[in-house]
Length: 341
Image (cartoon, rainbow, N blue to C red; front, top):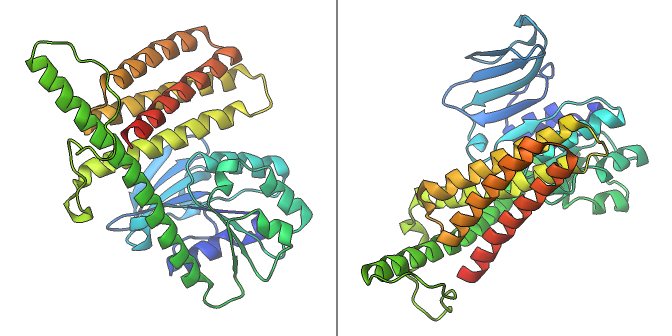
């Protein structure tokens, strides 16, 4: 969850209010807040050095200005959500760079407005990546123009004394629904994988090659019957959920990079690197206990070989082709899930 906005938007104060304590220092740069048993930090400095330590960081104590902090703290909310507090200047370019960076790692966006949203501020939000708008909140004192409020999923009047509790309740519902959605899709993936494994093992025992079959209809008893929530294997559900989250975020990240209006070869190289990293992560998750069917495994191997060749050739055309390869992989996984349904 990311707190975004112009410098006057009070992102730090609102993050601290939602957390229920004054964890974030206004002097800090952009920071990520995660749960930890004791306060600790990892600081990335402007000269790219990384410094880690216990307790909370003091900005003036570093040998170079800090560019980013990751802060661990024993706060209950951080067990459920990782928070980003994004600090960016008012210029358009700086805001857009910050929003595109945040979109690659954010599921829930909170735009912090210092007052009723004016045209210039609204234009910045309208130009933000669509991924940020999918689950978005406008935090503003008082009402904003209806057009501005309509651009967000929800609005919270920060003049109301109970806005933090209302927001926390809404976030709890949103995260619960998201986990149920991931669990449902994960169930399809795990159930169908189990069916394929069972069928393949049986046919190998008979000495015949397995033949492709349509997914079993709903009335057929699945190889692994659905289990009550309490009986589900937590590790399997964690892996399935992580696979889906990695797929969604990674594909959005690559496409977002391609949307930059530039012909920079460095951008092309970054797209190809990200595509390769995403495919590698997906392969690892699929192999890490989820056991995909053979056709999906073969497709992943073919995609990996193609990306290696594209990366060797380099260039924007190859970067676009890499995005197409990822699109095919994503479509194959989604089709697999639909068949399992």
